[in-house]
Picture 1 (spheres, helix red, strand yellow):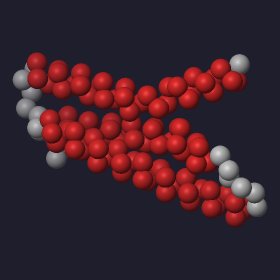
Picture 2: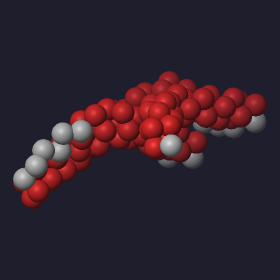
Picture 3: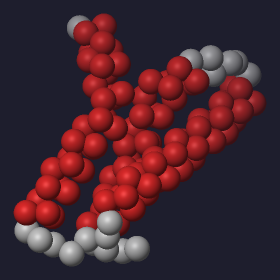
Length: 110
């Protein structure tokens, strides 16, 4: 059962950014249908990239810091941490950045 859960996690987590792009497209369509006054669509795309990359960088720095701390305190290697970041934490943090960009675009915060 654990292997099946791992396979599902490895499939679902990298799709989080794609899922959020789909949600953003739906939100843009809703805004257009309602004739809501929103910032330009290009701003949403640029903020998506900006906040997504910011989320990636922050989670990478946190993973590296955790690896150093773990190796220093435990005396053993944190060998699978980069793999965990690449498969799990990286896509999730990019998706979180996308969500923040969508929220800020929706409420006209910038």
